[in-house]
Length: 272
Length: 312
Image (tube, rainbow over all chains, first blue to last red; front, side, top):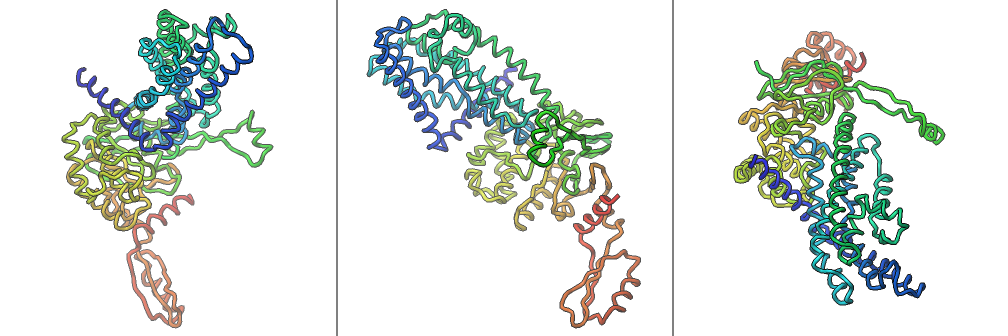
């Protein structure tokens, strides 16, 4: 038991390390993905909120001032960047549709575990390297951030990543049956982007919609952690986030497992 | 006798969408698609012992790769039973996957962006091997393949031949008891082909794994295989030794001759018993200035045999 536990961690840490080494190899792509893309999104969000406050001439929107929204505009794209998995989902889908998954199937590793560890490794390194940007902006512009709440907020985002990966796994199993599922990936990720509250804080949405969304796991990727860091919500909302993400992971794992089994029965090993 | 691979009436069907020509048919196909079933493998029964190298030969689409995919657990069989090392491969149990290896000659199985040595370290963790033992095994195998100098180079910077040597080391790192080699020498130059062939010969003599080898280079089969399986249209059409195959096939000699004032050499393939008759025919048709009789090479024998089978 102890031996298999050690083997599990040894193997998965090696996958994480592989992701870090492989991604750092392509420096240009890494810089764009880890820094330029979130900076552009932060820029868009900040301009949007500055324009809203300027045109409405309001001092408070939804009970919060301009600084609170600027803080949201800095941190929401940063966490939103962590809480998606475009790159690894595309790779997983491609593995199934091209048949290169054969290499994984023929080895004593699980497809789910292999990509989960790689994604976590990549997310960890990009988070560590790019965290300085929102921290320094918040500090220099005196944005209303509870710095002591950042670790727990980040923990929720990383926990949410398990759900995101499981959803990517489910999408990739569709490739067994349909081969090309790029449009599904696009629709799913855009929907999650909206439901997570990256563009607009969930508490600004109509009350009924806001209540329903907060019961779902998706705001745990962006809205809940940012709202917690900026003081819009308290620890109870974080607990609710952990609970709804846990339930969703369980349900999506069951669906993914069933689709995976059916998919392998359909699989023809194309390209081998 | 215990067999490491045993199949009975193994079969696999593929369902294929019949895509008709043109835009109109593509639009119709949006809601109404016609599928046909094609048997890629039919009633294949096999028994393979440990330490045996089996050459699996057939034309493109004959079912070779389908058979390898079923045996290695990549796909499910539609009919029949299969046991490899006592396991049903399609269940992909960890204990089975730890004891077998597949090398797909046209696919990279090591990691593109890291060095081969880093890939082996990762494989050692995947297979839960002792890291020191694994390093020693890499050194030994690299010496046998004479490729020690490229172990620290990224895979994507290696030549095809070097890459294939790296892939072979990767597939043997965990000392598999069963090894499936699909076109291991494809696209390689003569020197690299010979090195890999010689290496496999020595390796099998020393470690005695069971190997199923497919190749389009008949020299691979002729040099390495103890046993030959010929597959045509999903069915086994020959199962026996390479020597027996060469002896029993009809076309076993080749007459090469040249007529006076004719610069081109001509060839005539015939059965042993037809020698006098064919010689007479050749001599009657002109003044022969050069004549020699050669064994028909193995590749040609197989091609003729398969061509004949395909006509049935």
